[in-house]
Amino acid sequence: MLDNYFPVLVFILVGLGFGIVPILLGRILGPHRPDSAKLSPYECGFEAFEDARMKFDVRYYLIAILFILFDLEIAFLFPWAAVFQEFIAAGEHVWFVFGSVMVFLAVLVIGYIVEWKNGALDWE
View 1 (cartoon, helix red, strand yellow):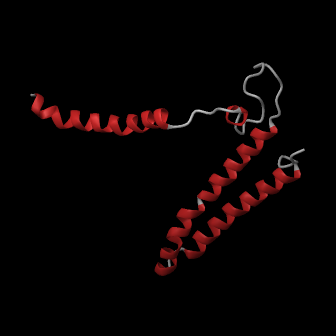
View 2 (cartoon, one colour; view 1 turned 60 degrees about the vertical axis):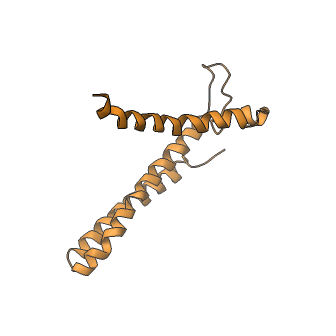
View 3 (cartoon, one colour; view 1 turned 30 degrees about the vertical axis):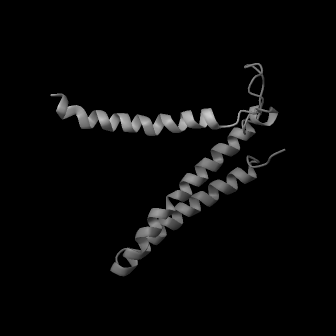
């Protein structure tokens, strides 16, 4: 019975080895010289070790959310661009596909203009 599970056991051990050995080598062989720059918060907008009830500026998070929103919406254009050449070659529904993407881009541009006019992109 153990002969049936031996390859699975070897696979698990090799996987653990590939995961654990580089971490241990980095810990043992790597330099340990922490300074204030390495211990400082990275892109969080405020000090990490202060009072949890302090007021903080939400504009940083608003800009990050808007970036993710527009970035993900633009990522929807890649599949369209990949298959658009096939629609042109087939000669089917080319104007419908093109028009639907133009409507999509128009909604993105309108959303961007609204955010710009409302001052959501201003960093003071």
